[in-house]
Image (cartoon, rainbow, N blue to C red):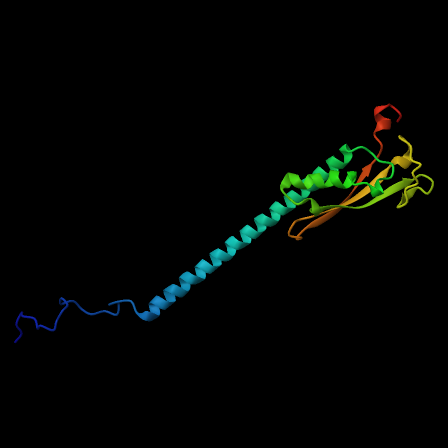
Length: 170
């Protein structure tokens, strides 16, 4: 016959035992692995977004420097043979400061001169160009490179002596 007294070794109330009495080590390890996998996936996505934003920022700054260099070059006074002069280079490099880039990111690669006689660009400056003449055209090739060297762009600016236009010569 059973009595309603409990033994001293019984520490639980009288309910049926089930398989869900606690969390096993295997369950904890699986939960940590799943959580870690989710965190790694999220961090990878965040790094991709940050890298993409930086590349987009560099591309925007590159375009801003190109536009600024073009404006600066067109604003500086025309020179007949600017090969030994730093005026074009300094004007183009001033655009880099607008986006906090070093001036060395902008380089004037080449200056070519239009020759009406050959109907083509030439590297040799004849020095015979007169204001308003067709020979006064210059093609200035510029390269802009992002500071981290991830992007670069070369472009040409065609410059002429605008004094002839101001005086009504053309």
